[in-house]
Image (cartoon, helix red, strand yellow):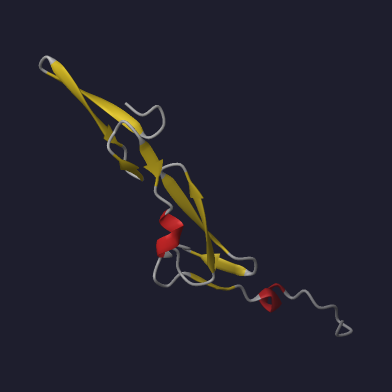
Length: 88
């Protein structure tokens, strides 16, 4: 069975191979599926593919759930009062 992304099932007198979730193939050869090609992340988020998985991260200046349909929303930096008293 494939060393990366594969698994073995012991059957009576024989065995079979398969691919883990996030991989495709016949079990002897398993290839990572790039989930990012299907744009699984919400708006204002970036996708990073990894072996058998992916992660979504909000872009800089945004916060929230990067996988949700609401996705990442703009952070109101002015709410933290970053400006000085003289307007700069």
